[in-house]
Picture 1 (cartoon, one colour):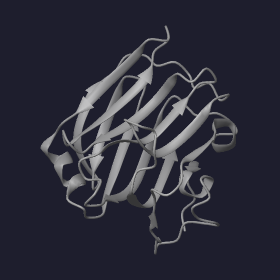
Picture 2: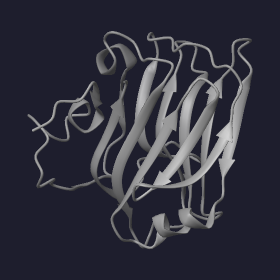
Picture 3: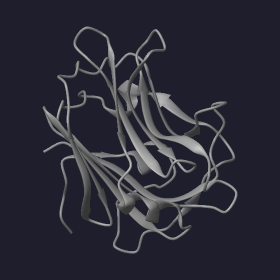
Picture 4: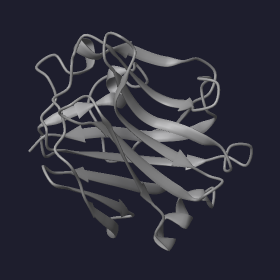
Length: 183
């Protein structure tokens, strides 16, 4: 089994114990908020370049919801980085904080993203580099955008996964994995 440099958020949020196997179990989310101190998720910090890879499927009741797949807040509660899945617009948004504490939002609306909302299992990959963000669906590049320079992540805040944007409640999805690679 190959080792990877990064973080298994599925394990960090106590959904799974131990190592990732080829036969991934799935977890139905939506009953309790999944929020942790950022330091406990990324004890050595998060690189400015990373990839987020997740396997999930939306449910009939949530396929039109707008929700955070992943979000990191600083200690004052401001969003530093987030990935929003928007079922109504069939889009994915990547937001990050710039060097001047300004916020950048990049909306990806490629038709390839529509598959994420068909209630089947899909792999969503987001590759964040110093000047680009790329979105992959089922290992195929869907869209790539040029980005502005981002600030480094403040580890003194909190990190959450699978939370509705409108009210902060857990979103009812099924999740097999959510990993962040840093190489």
